[in-house]
Image (cartoon, rainbow, N blue to C red; front, side):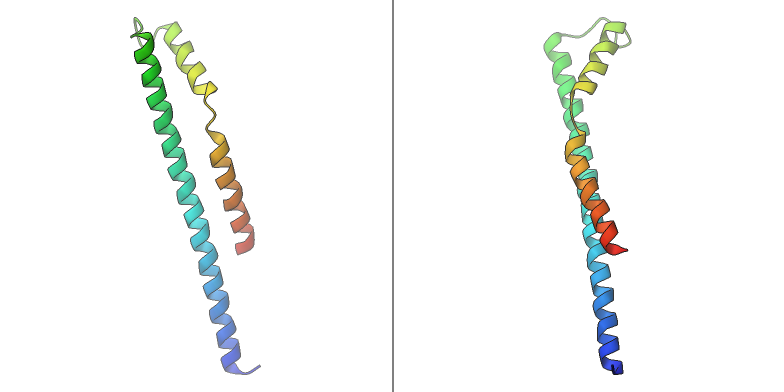
Length: 96
């Protein structure tokens, strides 16, 4: 192999590594954005639930705590994030 071919291969390897890193960063940003959207949705649904039921006597009352914990537990927010996490790990594996 002459020097030009080695240089070209090195450049291609660097470009491929950069492309994979950019894909990984994009997947990470999408995962963070999805988490933020899910958190906002949780807050909105909790607020809506609270407004629909009327204000409880006290935000620290046991009934309110039970309601809030059950609402937080009942909402499934991990599935979209799990998919992005798996893609991120796959890209990490390709990068190495």
